Length: 125
Image (cartoon, rainbow, N blue to C red; front, side, top):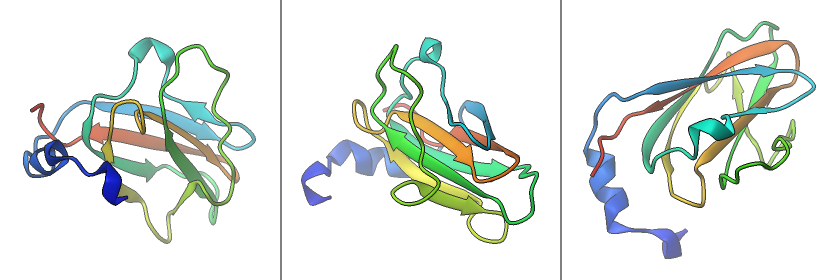
């Protein structure tokens, strides 16, 4: 969205650095999200990867939303508007995390289990 563009996003995009990785173990029938005690993701560029999908043909659905401590688990749909990952298709996505907008990640699978890795790939400004 044009109205949300910030010059800091441009700086962070080119300031690449392999940072900390956090892991979500997504399961069918329920969503998982980053724990409250870790707080929101720090703004910057992140790589979201999906590996270890246990059921052939299963999809892993991922959403990025505003971090709000103490709320019930985020409901992740198994369809749009969540983002679909599949072993025969997209297994990684680069995204920008913005404070108060997309600083919480949640996921679920359509069947079986999978592991979602979230790695910071930009250095602090």
